[in-house]
Amino acid sequence: MRLIFFIIYSVLFSLISGCASNAPAPVIEKKITTDKSTTSQKNKSIVRAKRDPGQPCPDTYIVKPGDTLYSLSLDCGFYYKEVAQANDIKEPYAIKVGDKIKFSQVKTNNPVGTSNEIKKNEEVITTPLKNYEEAVTNTEAPTQSQTKPTTGGIVHLDSPKAYIEKYTDEAYNHKTVTPQTSAQPVNNSPVPTSKEVTPIVLEDKVDWQWPTKGKLENIFNEAQGQKGVDIVGSLGQEIKAAGSGKVIYSGEDLKGYGKLVIIKHNNTYLSVYAHNKELLVKEGQVITKGQKIATMGDSGTDKVKLHFEIRKQGQSVDPTSFLGQP
Image (cartoon, rainbow, N blue to C red):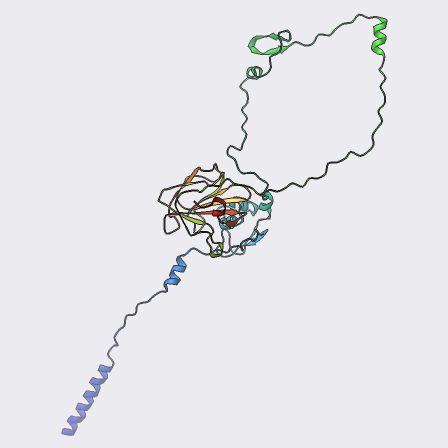
């Protein structure tokens, strides 16, 4: 009897132990962490390909990841619409990796060092005269013996009267004699041609000034990607044109620059004004040195500042070498 009881007890104990071992395991909640460096890298603007410092703009360029028509035009110092027209690129000026952008035609239309600084009021406007009477008042008045006033204020000039000479044989013979002239020797020697003069190409000059006041930060360093200087100021502070020229870009299509203005001063120099709050000029507008073009802001960046660049033939140059210290 005791043996049977012991066997039953052993079987029950084994069953209870088996049920206990099949209990669900505790769930350990693990937090999925992300690499901050990877996330921040994704949030950054795409770093676009750029030419080596000092390397001239190629005649043909193959589009690489991160390139835009705006960035390529800026790097070569050209108006993006001229580049688009030369390559038959329509709005919204989209390009893709592998496209060939030809700059040779744009170079032909924009020879370096052959244009003067762009001036305001370049066009000459002619106004037609209101009436003929206005034209008469601006001319030298004829003498009284030559004029005869008529109605309407229009002046008529009398035709010269012919002098009638009486007929005589002496007068007739005098009029019909053909005067003798000495024959001039014919010079068959070739006409000397003027020597061809090779024009001297001079570098375009710009009368520069600092575009705004403030603390100078992040000085120019092309090797580290700092293509200009940062001027820290206050929100809404005036931004002025550093030189006379023509606005070739006003917008915010160029990554990393925020609200941007680009001024073409001549065929050599451009100036760049980035991170503005408000843009006050439009593309194609001719402006003068010191004219207000924008207000300072923080668009596309982390603090209120102006990022200012000077481009020589598309290449970034140190603004302080032209303007000195602010």
